[in-house]
Length: 326
Image 1 (cartoon, rainbow, N blue to C red):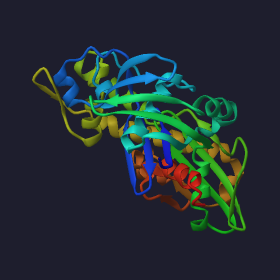
Image 2 (cartoon, rainbow, N blue to C red):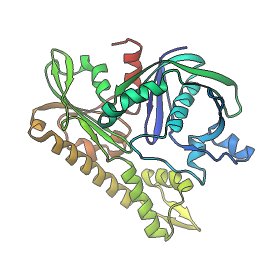
Image 3 (tube, helix red, strand yellow):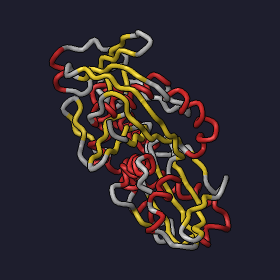
């Protein structure tokens, strides 16, 4: 048993333990009618025996993304069974067995409404998992802490921020972007309440929608959900996509979408700050979106600073607080 921080996003699930991190797509498909070759080449095939006696099989992660029945939710409240399966799979992949302590997070805009209910549901959560026909392990949440996404990162890096003054944190994710205006007082971060600190429902999914739209316009057919991940990767890498012996360059539309979404996020964040934007001394950027948008996003903010390993910033902060490292 060891403490673990788990960040269950709309696109990926990230986890952090001492000296190690990992991630996998936050995708779950109930249909497991797949052949052995598919199982061996795409992770993960999960057999889960819940504590109430239910036994289910699910395709999770990369295997789910490439299944014809993939549907990724963007609801404010993730389906409970999918969320809990992703949490337990992250713990399994990290090497947990038996009871363990976990820190998780919620977007700031949803935190007050969902924190108590999520903590109550996860407390005592237990199941036996078998992953890709490997060993079976009984996992149980012994202790859980639910943190406000983004805000906990400021707490974890307080010693590296101005001792007094104003700091802005921006966390662009796949479905939401967190922005937190924080006043540092004698080295202690004090987040300012709404509208200065909140969640906005804009993120990288809008870039993916633009890529799918460009595909449909150029190829003449809708982009199949189980092929979308490969098309997105190629488009984002500037590589042509081949279909029916023809190559299609989606990079112009992709670059335009990245710029448009970054501008939209920046405008909405700065609008929420109002005249307090002028008091910001430094801007901390975390999350995978910071790598996706690059200067398209950072150019809008004062003294922008991307943290080390931004993708794992939340999970690592959950772990640091949970483990008593702060």
